[in-house]
Length: 418
Image (cartoon, rainbow, N blue to C red; front, side, top):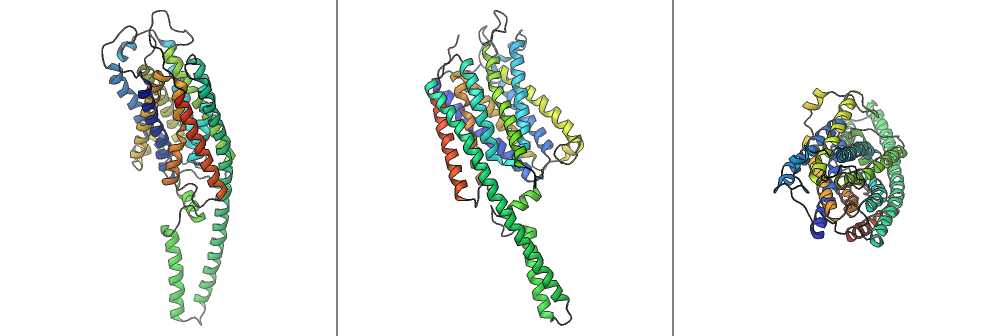
């Protein structure tokens, strides 16, 4: 079994996990914005997410000889370690619930804000629990100021969301007024065109003018990112229609998801270290790869079961689907499969780093909104043409996340191995 034991290796894994965990939500969000059914996407994601855990178990979990203290993956499958397995399954369940909820929250409040709020709640609650479960191996004088920075980022993120929503509302209202003006001019031109006294040349000019306007609108040519027309076209294209919906509903979903995320890492910690002494004497702790396998199996079972039900009984106005329609839907499937792969790698690296340096320090990967915000700006054009206040809040929030991740990474200790 391959084990990371030095601090440098643990930090390297956490940085890789940070990049992967910040990227996979952007891929799922991309598919939703292009109009693909959310349930189809999550089913694809679940397949590759589980595949990563299986590969980890039968490769890294089987390297070297098996010892009584650190048995290999296959050996542990036959041991009486069900209390620890239960914690791993519970961790996978809450993670599955959290991931499913965030997919429904992205259309309401945007990728960046969803990741900010959910990750910050995860750190504030989950890292505190992990600190005590890890027998305080992390330096509290560095760890908890880092947690405080995450908490500040929550409030900055909420203020950013409010400012950004107001900006978008103003853009959409301006776009509606422009549309009304264009429609009025078109009606006036048509009346003139239909008048008997209008010349053929005037008719051709009028038709040509209106045809150009309609062509630009239909093809999206000349539409600049961040404008009201851009936002309206995005709303028309995406899978979940949220026009007129209250963003408060999306924020409630995010908060619930955040508390789910706050529980999965402590549950995994208990699964691998048995701090509550649930295992019988002589039974070795679950190795990280065995726990990761059970963890991912439960996340897969929940994700597939929930989404198969939602295919036939969709929520929030989504169209009804079926298993046959899912199997025949290849549009965007490659992005959904890649998202599951990246999420699985990110979770696996986080757990491997946490086993070496402490799960509280490994929660530094919850600075993933740094990566998600980057993709949100580059791919989804979030915050384009926003107000100065919005830009100031965005920079302040990102600065707090940079400071927080540095403090959490710097607080890491070295776990004692038997």
